[in-house]
Image (cartoon, rainbow, N blue to C red):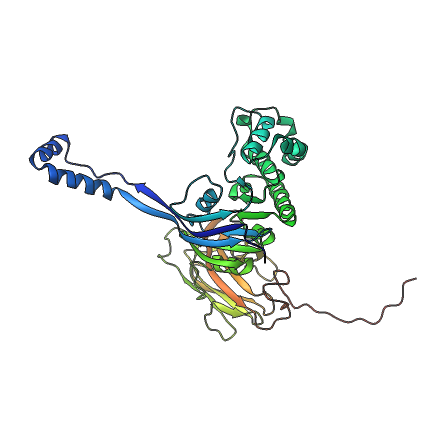
Length: 425
């Protein structure tokens, strides 16, 4: 077994947060107290200063290893400590405690324009950034044309980068970091600045980098990109490691944070008095009619919605959107009559049910988004990703191997055998 290229042991990073002091008694009273009881006054000042400084641990006892050629996705919610970890690994900031061992040259892309000089041109910044990454002039010259072609900024190569857009910054910075052959490439969420085509291009380049045996650490909130690119994952939660392992397991753990699969949602506040259609309660029902958040993939289930209309509405519509754990929208369905026309909803309380067939969803975690609106006119109510269900494997035909699935849905379709067709001439 190969030795790890990155070893992190009990890494911690502490920051001291300052808080604004409460309004005092004024200068006159402060001086009087200082002269009358200097020791007491000094002690009170020290206590007040300490109270205004709060410890915040961005990272706490983080430990993990990364093997050569491994592509690790580092995920977690905002404030989990991802960017702090990458800055320490990139030697931008020092840890409070702990140890890091890195066996190789590191190239980092953490923020737009990091390592660029505003007054220098794109051409000059390629050489400057390459030198910062530890490359010789000969190495940079050898890769120069590839960098320019990948970044697609040849037209502006001799323009000072202070005139570049954020997208142009990212293109050039990523091109430099990826083409100068570091053993370790660290990429933060900065790629989100680029357009969709460039993001796809960058993901392809990172796949090429990993195929060459180099190591990639990738931070993103785009779970589809993480799943596509990464083989292993690290989940951070409030500065601590929650799980390290295969990317499907890590994504499942991340997407289940703060989610209870109880299959029941009730409006936390009274229905608004303004005109509209509002959800009062949503229940997920299994085949027995019981509320359930965990469902078998071979069984059907029903989404039951209890809504209240403050008055009668024509062309009204209730809609459901189902999203899987990678953020991919599986389907959208809406309330229509038998002629595919929007419905009329009278004032009062109504119950609607939508049934999903068994053998439709593959095993995984899904969230529901519900909306009540008049299409093209106004949105009345929106329940956004607060209802989750966990579909468990119960022997469907989609089962192949562990941590592998066939697509995003698994419908049973009619396969009708026909008579043997005559041979084509």
